[in-house]
Amino acid sequence: MHMAQERALLVSARGVDKLRQALASAGFLTIASAASAGEARRAAAQDTWPLVVINAPLPDETGLELAMELTGVTLSAVVLLVRAELMSMVYTPATEAGVLLVGKPVIPQVLQQSVQLAAATHRRLMTLSRENEQLHRKLDEIRLVDRAKCLLIEHARLTEPEAHRAIEKQAMDQRLTRARVAQLILDRYEL
Image 1 (cartoon, rainbow, N blue to C red):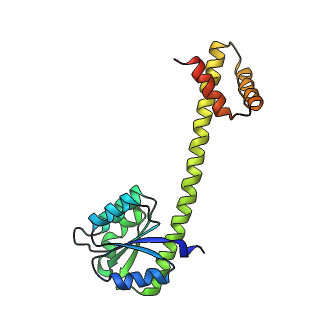
Image 2 (image 1 turned 45 degrees about the horizontal axis):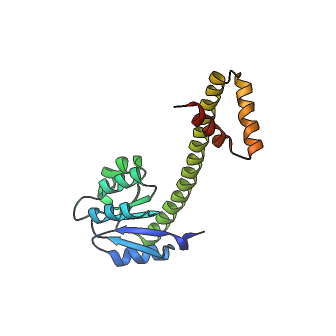
């Protein structure tokens, strides 16, 4: 497990030392702190955090809003610590947003397991995000090549298979990517 390289943002107005110790024992070496939701938002805007642990309530809001916002706009795994009697009230909106809930009072082993699960989830999310980016790049390349084929069909009077072959051949002959050849064709024919 690569936990020793993990970084965490701890958002808490109280109990910071105990929570820091729990995170450190779970393998988090770099732990930044924010005492309010406002500070946490600034920290999240300035840096990426694989894990964000929010000890609710916060001085400026309940903490649920921050947790849901962070899961919506970042790839951070978010763990929200809430009083046990409030769990049923926040469960549905929190879990639908992808927030992991831990009831208070916090049992150190449960917190450790929760942050390790959250870190594993974050790593999986990062893998899926990279795969998604690769697929988007591939789709963009296909669209670019298709546009270039259309221009070859229109201006060079080639058939679709001939246009495809022309792009492939030029890419191989000039040791360029199909996307680069397509861009050169677009630059030549488009205004």
